Image (cartoon, rainbow, N blue to C red; front, side):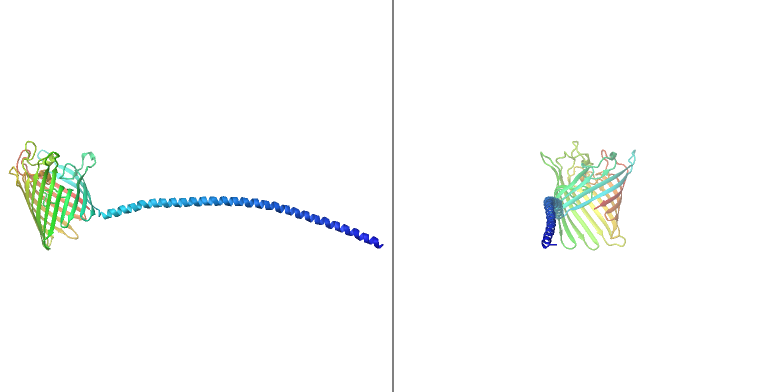
Length: 437
């Protein structure tokens, strides 16, 4: 073959080769451009997704902030509620602290009784159940001042008793306030004002155990030495208030002495109770009772009562550790009738120690019609004055604060008078169970 022909053949082959190479490159370029287009599309999708994610994240942040805010509000509200809850607690603590500072004291007693009364001529015997409840409290606003009050059951028009007879078709019980007072202490002296506890000592011939005093009162007690004490009790007792004139009242004074040694004790006093009964609008039959009356319904006698009392006890014996004698004499020095005197003698013995406590008492008494003001004397028997009475009392402490006692009365009218004929002795028996605190 000629050289020219060979060169032409080579050039032709080369051109063919270059054309194939150019086509391959074009394909590659087209593929690259397609990939680039895909990449850009993917980038746009990624950007779109990132924007969406960012939006979601922003929304989540807002939600989280809201949730956290709500949680914080809830915590704040809970704290507020807790604080509000704690506030009453603090207030209650403050109230408790104030009450403790007042040194409150609560006291009272409850008693149930069975009573038997022997029949009068032509009548039947009477049996009844009786209950009594009393609840009191005192506070001390500061060291010298005590304020006290007591609630009682029973007839509010009868100061001699807070007993309630069971019956009356199971009606509810009445309640009243029989004490509401202040007591101011000045060393050995105590001053009372209001309606305050009984401060005079003695038997119940003059003062029934349920009778408080009202008005003003004072007590003084002073040691002379280790064995002897002297005491003085006084009152201005407001009995009935008159808005247009003089009130009914009583001025009372009691002076006494006490002696205590290892084996012997002695209590003695002299008292005077001077009544001015000029106004009686609040008095009723239950107040006049058996005192002598004028036709107009007022008292026949004036009442200026002297009483002498003595209690001697020996406290060291083999079988019981106390035995004693009490003597009580009374006389109304301003009576307008002959029945102006009374007396009582009591004998008692008992055993009081850490394991048991019992006592036995026998008394005999005679009280003439106007010897004392019947309104405030005892109501142990149906006759307030003008009686002779024998009584026997046995007391036994069953447990701390729980007392059982049996009491028997045998009594009769002392002197015959209208409405009070002389009859044989009557009997009254009582069984009491009492709890006190």
